[in-house]
Image (cartoon, rainbow, N blue to C red):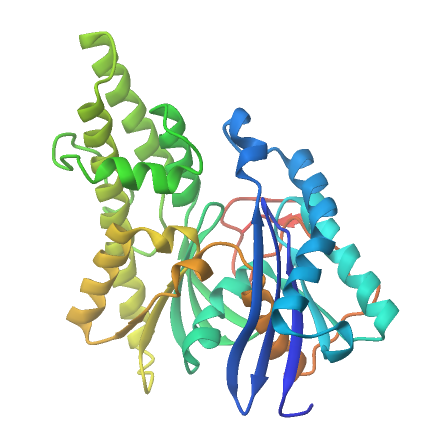
Length: 364
């Protein structure tokens, strides 16, 4: 493997179509381009992502995103050393669109192909942005996932805990829908919460009374629903301040749960006495300022370096996929044209399934 490696990455696991070109040279990473086309207007009327609509949009937009990414990087496919693509987990139609596109490019250009776990893309983002050394503790917190990972290598992860039901991002989206706010829910709830009183409603902090790092957010969402219904019954509707207070209370509860569970995960990680301890957070919910502040305060008290990616790299993007592909290719990983799209793909294959398992494998 040459010292310089330039990879085209593709991402289409949910409702963002993305392409990016990333280069590693002399051990340092450089994002040459990153193009993301969101689909929010296509799904707005449905209150959430519609898989069939998302898959069709990916198929229509991938080639345009690739052209734009190559143009921004000042390259053609002849200047690329390989193709990395999200091969799962995610909405299977979208994942399949990306995988088939990547296969076609790899076959036509004779380029190496590597399928990347979408979660690994998020988990390796601190390596892309800050060159973080292994091992480090990662909180992956997004719309569909929430788990603590000890990141030991590009394909080596130990899960310390995770959500047993809704992910925080999913709970934010459902909260926004319950309160008549727009989508995506996370930014809408955060914006409404800025004018709210987080102490007005006594929302629960689920699973804090149990040991370990597992989390639950479904009951918190139900508590908010009951508080909303109580207000409507008592006064015939919701006032603006009611929404603000509900959002503030909900957000404070999520941040408190994540902070306490992070404290426990840090204790497990620090027991290994890492030479340069670091705690990183990635995923869409990592963009939430209340969550970031709670985790920053925790790390400052523990004397542990805290890292969070730039906001543009918190949400789904192809730069993280390209970087993960660089690390995997450098480690000798290659996929052929039998690469399959996977709706489920846990990072820690040795851990017991948290959300059940079926013919398609463990959900998480």
